[in-house]
Image (cartoon, rainbow, N blue to C red; front, side, top):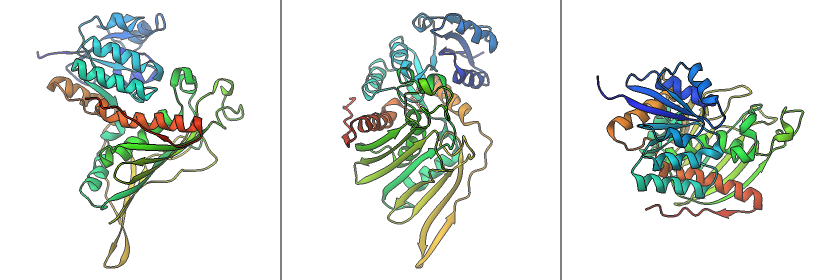
Length: 362
């Protein structure tokens, strides 16, 4: 028998179960440790998922003393920073759930420590594993649109507000922007090759979350449920970004890439009250261009697949463990995603445009 890759899980909430489900489908992987800050919760999780070889811990640092090849971090957002730093410094490769962190400063240090220790910091953006996301990127990168100068992206749920740890700033750090907005940003930025952001002008609100008519935990709701921003990038590129957990509207529109030779419209694959955001699959892709002076719309055939994008995310992390890296979705790339989210919150609070400064990681 070949090497068995030993995995630890930090945080045993709902998303941790999805990690376990995916790891269990990989033959040379074994989950040997689960840590959760709430006493007894790790043991309950181990029993529920029948992880017979796993030990439970109330302190993730104790689990990190084990021999582990990788760690999945599935904690609430506010704990991403410290658990990642501790895991990297303990010599473990990290599969971190999105969003990367709460602040840009935290994200910068996380990337720095990954570089210093030589350990992987991989960020979990599973929509990338839809082959049609690759198709969209390929069209843009091969110049089918010419120079892209304007992008509009984002998604809106008519009614799709979570509760619990997602709606408290002290635990989540941010609301809709960090929860689903980061996916929309990754769709646009990864397609464009992750250009460098320069400035952000943003507005956020929480009219629905704080209203008992719309949310049962309105008295505890202190993050944004809606946000919109104009982001300027190097090379004279502008992004119009918008995200909503709840609204009186059916959609915030398609993702659009405007180029000097053609434009591309991309629809999300889901619909309904909880649909319309980029945590799912691609719905339809169209190219708008001129042929011999005629305005033409070309429908791009989608790739038919039965992949579970979440499972593909975990499989790719394990593949990187086997091959010695690099991280499939590296922290230094997602740093720019986090910088925009950080800038949006700063701009919204100060009600003015703010500059984005990302230090040289080296």
